[in-house]
Amino acid sequence: MKVDTLNHPTSKNYIAGQFKDHDYKKMDVFSPLDGTVISTVPLSDNKALEEAVAAAQKAFPAWSALTMKERVQIFFKFRTLLEENIDELTEIVHIENGKIRSEAKAEVLKGIELCEFACSMPQLINDQIQEVSQGVECRTSHHPLGIVASITPFNFPFMVPLWTMPNAIALGNCMIMKPSELVPLSVQRIAELLKEAGLPDGVFNIVNGDKVIVEAICDHPAIEAVSFVGSTRVAKIVYKRATSNLKRCVALGGAKNHLIVLPDAHLEMAATNIAASMAGCAGQRCMAASAMVGVGNIDHIVKRLCEVARDIVPGSSLGSVISKEAKERIERYITEAEAAGAKVLVDGRNAVVEGKEGGYYVAPTVIDHVTPDMAIAKEEVFGPVLAIMRTNDIDEAIRIENSSNYGNASSVFTQNGGMARYVMDRVSAGMVGVNIGVPVPREPFSFGGWNESKFGVSDITGHSSVHFWTKLKKTTTKWNPEAFTNWMS
Ligand code: NAD
Image 1 (tube, protein in one colour):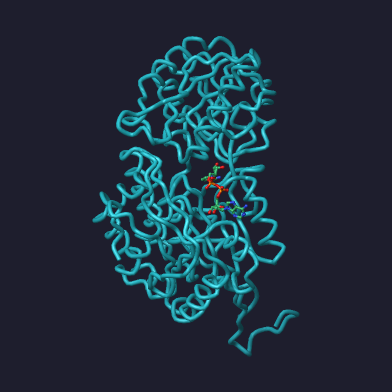
Image 2 (cartoon, rainbow, N blue to C red; image 1 turned 120 degrees about the vertical axis):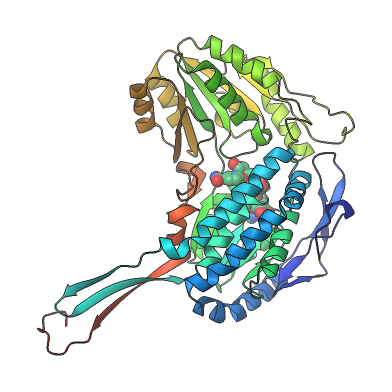
């Protein structure tokens, strides 16, 4: 089956290399661009999961017995196929998620980069070997865990599945993917292209659904590890449930990212970066700038930022938010902040795109004189909204950042290296930027926040993910009987 986004495909589970017509209740999938139904998705239960686990168990012995170099050959081919199908993949992301085409394409390109990291796995994994006493050698080797699962959110339907799948599979695991039920199509196309690249049946499987299937994954005794990306509320549920069932788990949650802006910041670089960070992907990024703390007089930066924000137009340079409920939630935060005394400088409420009146649009919104106690200053809004707080004291700005329950990203804008360093050293966030609105660490660096933005020890990508998806064997050998016998021999 080739996903034809124009013909409203029915999303299906993918088990043992086949799309399956399970007889489950189906949920409509809407394109947030115009509110039309583009697909349906089955709300699966444990029965489909059992089938997927059985397929993965059947595939695991042969897949894990291959060398790493053999396994990554699939990802070299897969990468080529992604490039060949880039326009179609872009269109699927655009239609199911609502981000504009240039952002959808950037998401696909980032997915290709993630694939390249998996291709380089044989060069990256350097197992150790050392003669630890006369004639006795110790060595470490990385081994796959077995059957693993990945649960993903709506905001990056193509990229987030590629945060986990290529690394986990290249390292010898078999995977069960549970995409967001709001955006099930990109992952279907990924499954088809993996098959075309030669991935053996059962190594990658998809079970669609909602909370029911997520709970079944967390409870299944044959699943060794669960990775989760989504809201903090659900990350906590998944982390507690998976680890209480003695599984390895890394669960990435939501965010409230602070930008600390000093008056000496480069005006154009700061204004354009901040606007792009808060409005890009309609603010539906866990790395989006959502709170800004100005230290001293930053009026000139706010003025220019508002000009840039006003030039971002829904429907052309700004995509939709995911749903009617999301639009209402975002607009409610703006209205409540205004009622509490904040000043709306750029108002994105009630945005409508001509010809797409059924779509869910919120235009960029800049709100000044927000106070740290307001909900808009503390909670994740997940829309193109920037809440600006003011202070005259850098330590107070850092205190505001540190008081957040989250800790995904934080950035400082200044041209003073000493001040940048002062802030970098003190903010409580896993990913920190200087003069960068979206400080995403690119491969081979790993991605992961602090505090309630991530539960679990490892990060989800890069070098750190190798530790998450493997277990270490430590082997000690002795082949020379004539060697000195010590306490260890
Ligand atoms: P979500 O938590 O609603 O859903 C994520 C996944 O969990 C989906 O697959 C969904 O089906 C499942 N799920 C939903 N409710 C559940 C429940 N009660 N029990 C078990 N499973 C459940 O998140 P979302 O709305 O799809 O995505 C947006 C959120 O994801 C934002 O909070 C955003 O910050 C976060 N996010 C974080 C990162 C990160 O790297 N930290 C990256 C992307 C998105």
